[in-house]
Amino acid sequence: MFFGTFVKGRYHLSREIMVRGKKIRVGISVGDPNGIGPEITLKLLQKKRLLNFFTPVAFSSMKLLSYYKNLLSIDVELRGVHSLEKVASHKLNVINVQHDDFTIKPGEACAEAGQYTRLSLESATRALRDNHVDVLVTAPLNKDLIHSKDFPFVGHTDYLQSTLSGEALMLMIHHELKVALLTHHIPLKEVSKQINISRIIQKIKTLQHSLHRDFGIAKPKIAVLGLNPHASDNGLLGDEEEQKISPAIEKLFGEGILVFGPYPADSFFGSGKYKNFDAILAMYHDQGLIPFKTLTFGEGVNFTAGLSYVRTSPDHGVAYDIAGKGIANANSLEEAIFSAVKIFENRKAYDELESRALSLSSKRSHLKNNKEETRR
Image (cartoon, rainbow, N blue to C red):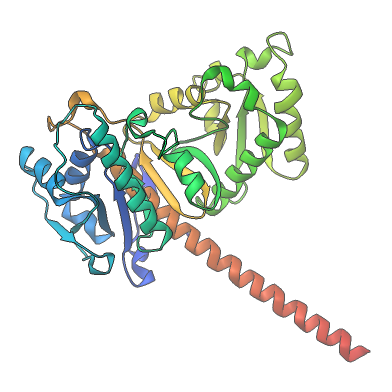
């Protein structure tokens, strides 16, 4: 049984979500403290009705969130806690991750902000890995500021891949469109080098399993985009489609996975062809994200599929240009939180059904073996 539905771009949960005995704990890393992450967190969680569905735990500091609360006159109750065992329901719980000597400068990019971002993310991820929170929602960060010799990752996805078990797949989700990326945060000139048959097969299998387990789609249909213009025009404009993409698609289709393509990327979205599929695999970042954000901006969510834990994020960046001005929109963060909650519950329901099926199969096998032994 799967819980919740998307309605007109907004996410609604059934009260059945309370069946697990306690509300889901949502860990929130606040992202760049000089960006809009703290603002949208506070704006969203001033909606007290939302706290009926989950318990938020922000990995930040009382100083930072109090600053934005007062600056922007946001009516939200903050509760500083020193231990995750002290988290309270119907409150925005705040776990302090840094000393209060950080100078807050809305809209400014600085090295101290990058360090703050990293500490928030690492603290929230540890809590997720240790099962102190159930899901992780990450507010936007500045990739340039967070990258260092101590943090050699380009962004959230690469870090989570190295920290949590599983094979990470960047999957942008919306109730009308899901776009996965074969490659993500790499230079365009490196894309072709990273495309190979085994990688395509692995990513499509990860996507297919996520659609089944995380979204309750029994037999998902997946479209694959070509790399080159017009999907190479039968080899005129490149050979990646013929040598790498098509062979992978044919192999997977032969295994019973409903995967089709490669399709020319330039007309795939504008023609509405994407509506015929449950998800699309794009070859590189902008090929997938430009159409996704054009069609869904403000309601889309970045989900890291393939990991053993659930992580989502809003579909926008730090937005320094509007930070501290009180005009940031929290819609995508709301979608990210409720998508994480839904996926968590879907996984729980799916895994319970799988466990029962395996148990039943084991019992049948045991009875069959007993009967055979009796006949002997």
